Image (cartoon, rainbow, N blue to C red; front, top):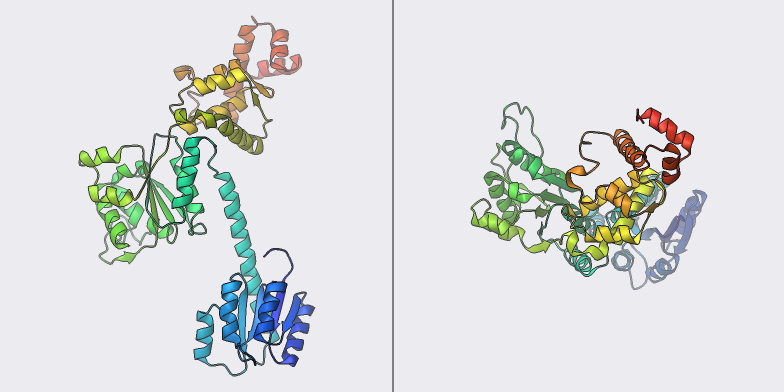
Length: 454
């Protein structure tokens, strides 16, 4: 709906019905207009833009209610039409519903039932609007960032493949954004309102993989006392994203090949075939052609998955996107972590541009987050990016922080930062405080709290 007004149109050749129903609905706070035949009803739909239309099935003139219904659903597909009739039949009701009517009600109308029916329709509109708003937020949060030639080509392929039903195979180095591209394809597709279910196959034990994907029947596995749905069930009518598809077991490859070719699968321990309405997007950091040649991946499955081959470029090949990516991640940290916006110097940007980024976009995001944590103030210079460990390998200040929460990791970073700054100033606390932009008394409290000795 375009605005908050709730508009209802009544199309009926009987004036008493128009007047009684109109008065009742206006009393309930709805905006109501009426029309006496099909032609004027269609004109009113165009001008008044009702969300709900109560439409009599038998009316004088060139068009009866079913004719109007058919045109209305073609011209105004978002509005809901309720058919009214004083002498309807089951056959007529079925025909109306097949043409797109929300419901079929008999005269004389029950105003209580009409009220409930209207509430249900507007509840549907609200839920649809909320779902669309959520999808819009998701699309914004999952935006593919960058305007360079390679990223433009990536966006173009996404926009072309998303509306289709084709399988997609994403390949590229770790950290290049394969999951993000898969999510974009899903949320720009007709399946956007349905589930997106990711499964990292590298993290699933081989002996449990078949059941994890396809589900299993009670008793199929030791200790399985009930039926278990697989990821295919949860992704029904949506998208199943298989990350690191090269890790599929031989059994899973056979079952997935059948799913892609026949649209059916069997649970572990069952011989009954089940239909699946699922789009498969797969990804791999390994070269699947090499895996096929080595006999580790089925050739027929590879060609089934490889309908739309999609190679994501490493970050070192699209360094022109670095400023946009840094700004994008900065926006996230400002919004989520309460940080101040930071500006990078020309020398800092040159150093980041010269770095190879072997971990690709994932490494860049982690590095920018580290900069926001470690660097005081709003300006990031060459010294700051060096201190934050750009290309530092084992000297990287985040090494050894696995398992720490944000607060403990930040404390670790702050202590290391203060130690280095104090050493740079030969233990002079006043000079250190001035250099890093802190009050001397506050720096003393930090030194004491971290147990830093002079």
